[in-house]
Image 1: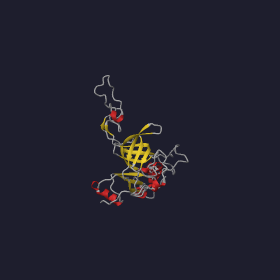
Image 2: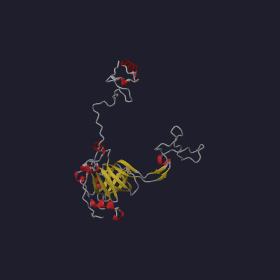
Image 3: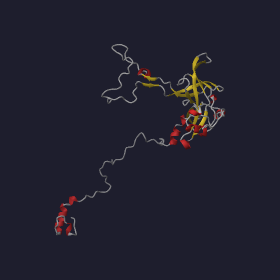
Image 4: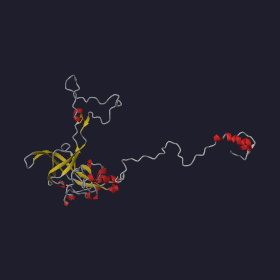
Length: 315
């Protein structure tokens, strides 16, 4: 039974203590209940412990790393030890092996390939070598790019390409010339170039569709693509990435594991086995093959060659 020392606390204004106590007893259900301690309340959050994942309970699991250094370490196995080179595709020819069998070859010429700049991990987050080839008249080069060439005391180049390397040991001196002897006979390289543009092409030429039947009632749709999607089951729309007619070619293509057949350092020619992407006269990026063991390059080739062309500041 609850007691009160003041008559004014009675909810009904009664003065007697008996009436006060009886009134509080009848209204005791309005008082807050005392909840026992350490009893979980009911709510949205689950009070049960989460189940352990049976696929993530090994002692030898590596720690998850999302830093830039960890990403570079994961890519270290596929990053070349040294820089690549730029060349110009001159055309195709044929050669004969010692057994007398004829095989096709592609001729690539290297024209005044020089190291223009460096990319370091402290400044750019990774190691890379910027390589330029050819020559361009200063009047056809923008002023910011002219200042870039003048800063590194290199003549204006027609093409500029960046090649990533593993560490600082792969950074060549700025101004060094890379000749055809940078690659050895018998080694494998990867060739990258923009494929020959073929304009707007249909589905049969672009993706190899078989086309519609040649007879049996087919009228004027022998080379048509056909249906582009369903009406109700797929949401009445065309799925992204659907193979359709469109612009064909004109994008970068990589041919891996191309064998170097012959190297002519005096003329700057490299003869490759088979075909490589791109039309005649296009710029080709050549680098050591990723899927083959790194070539055993002599020490004198790692330092490249000194610059042989006159260098003049043009700003």
